[in-house]
Length: 200
Image (cartoon, rainbow, N blue to C red; front, top):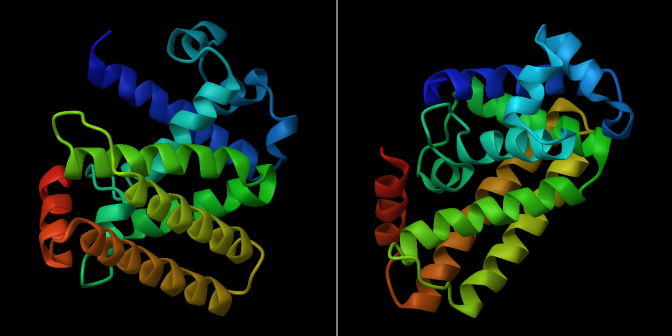
């Protein structure tokens, strides 16, 4: 199976998982529910994922790391000066909100933090070095605040959702500024590095 075919099948299973989450809490979803919604065999599921937790983590990563389906992460999209009106980005936010509403904060926080660390390692330590403790602390603070606001937004009116999204954008810009201060570089330089890592 080609890598492209495998990615398409994973995306199909993830889309089925999101469909199931629209109806059920995450703890009540079974592999059978997902494969029925995806219209695939059990063998196809287990070829790509060991269990539902692995599929869930992959699905969250896609929303965080490939928010616009062009390989751009929330970190890059939120750091840009102009907000993105991309419908896929809004879908990514809506899906994360749905999971928070149906499954709690822990899986989202854990995967989002790992993904953000990965982004910032690529930006700051492309040879695979370790992030400075001050940067890690800023990431934990920013991801915790963003996940908390998305959890709030998942049960809110449209106006509150917009306010929460604006807060998350401001939080991410503050994160970039604080990391820039920590490292003694400009925020603009960090945004340029994010652009480079994002392939934009």
